[in-house]
Image 1: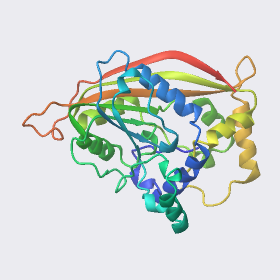
Image 2: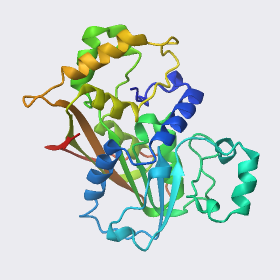
Image 3: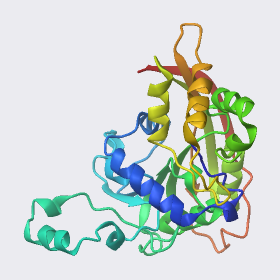
Amino acid sequence: MVINSNKEIDKLDKKALEVQMLRKERSNLIRHPFLLELEKVYYQSLNCINLAPKKAFSIDIFPKSKEKPSKGIFKKCNWICGSFLSQEENDVNKNEFLKIIRKLLPLINRKKKIVFPNTFNCFCFPDQSFDYVESLATIPWTENLERSFIEIHRLLQHDGFFGFASFGPTSLKEFIYNLKELDYNLSKQSFLPLIDLHDLGDVCGSVGFESAVVSSEKVLFKYKKPESALKELRRLSGNPLIDRSKIVSGKNWYKSILFALDKCRDSSGLVTLEFEMIYGHAWKKQKTSENPLTKKNSNEDFFIKEKKIKFFS
């Protein structure tokens, strides 16, 4: 249940992250409810924006389960899906026999095409390839957030739109607090602080985006049993930290997790997990003679909503 803090770049085990997220991809062919809700609050925020993209690029942690949004503004645009991992397509399709079969059978070869970056943050597209780029839920796992935003800035046309969403630092705060009370050292190796909405706005300005608007909402997910909550958390979690525990945590740690989750029950007796959904957008500046990466823009707006949405499982 670890999410990368972006501020501790050297502490990530890239290979572990790649392997773990590829494994999670297989179990997330159906979109995860946490991601669905994050996307929901983000796309709702576009209702008041005059936007009609023609060529869009969506960077995702589980691109196989990511579908083109049904919103009217995207109906006529060319939609391309990409992965945030530097996982080459050759690595995904290692079986040579299957490659031959896919070429021979057109029906099998119709699977969704996903664009992988050449390196951790760089894609093969030329400069100014898109007028809309979104990066939803990738921020917590990004090795270097500023470098990632610079690449998105490169991909966008002048006056292009960049949309993003992430889980905020207050996500799962009660659960993490309960777990630290039981085993502080082990829980410290299992969680990292998530990026704050103000820091996201600062990064946008530092790489050349302007008119950044960042908002947040609190969303509650409710479960009848701690086992159900844990199952859902595990589908979206992993531990890419270099200093993570190298030994299997064992049954005691598993029992501690269930106990900590059980203490998260609300007045109605349901296990409640609170997530902070951070979402926002920014624009690439119109073409000027000034280098956009040398000037920091301070015109960011921040909004925090205390609206809580409840989900039962």
